[in-house]
Image 1 (cartoon, one colour):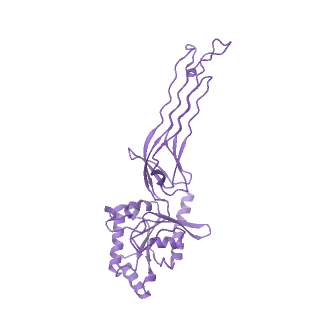
Image 2 (spheres, rainbow, N blue to C red):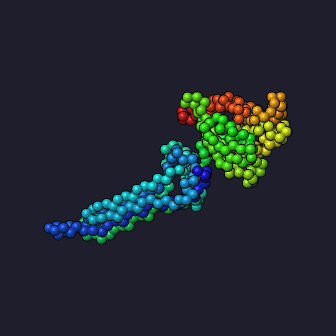
Image 3 (cartoon, helix red, strand yellow):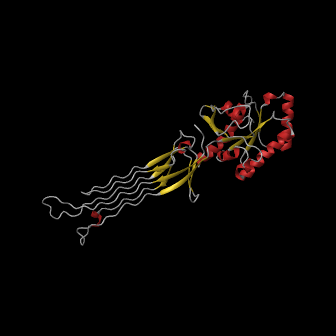
Length: 343
């Protein structure tokens, strides 16, 4: 299924049913009086998280959603049937905005999250409600209130603990294939990855985390060049960024340092908050270099960047060093999860 991370829809809640004007006209009851019932409430519209969804593609063709109208009141004090609520399934991580005001209405992240986006109309009143000591035969009733109508803009930010960041062909897709069951496309040309992929990385029984692979960035991405800038929002919820560098690219040394700095500059230009996220360096494709050349390039890159954070040297293709990387990532994430659980 095609990955879609934005959608615009219109939701219409059901109108309330109208009240009824009716009088009892039964034999042997000459003064039966009013017996018109109230209408039913209109159905409301909710957005509800479905953990089985990971894209907004279902909204490409269906863009209008309408809840059921409430039934009208009837004689013999019978109340109209309330309209059924409408629940629209969305993937976890969906942000909901009012299309007209751009106000954020909700952030659906929990597995059972639900958000009311359009309230159903209130029911109308039947003439029984207007009976009094001075008004024995009321002929008043009220129509049901109209349901809310609203345009919505949906934006998906995938839920992942770790995000992979890097240039095209840095080996991000190969890395996520090596450590999880995700199977993104891998090829020798740039921009093989056209949309985010999620993979669950298991490091032992009951010990796992979610990794996200997004399309590669290029210099000038923050100004609209390339594909990746559109998908950087999917890194917004991550706790850790893994900056994957193709150590076998070009001549090494200064070009690698310059490329790493340029990519971080694009990240900072897009979001200062995202640029301040914890970031580890993953030097990939060691299998394409002899050990001496690999060591020379690693030392040159780290010295040029004046890198102080964690560094991992891996070959995603051969899975060399990937187990150590995943164990370190889990050890970093687990205290944060426990702290959130305690609060």
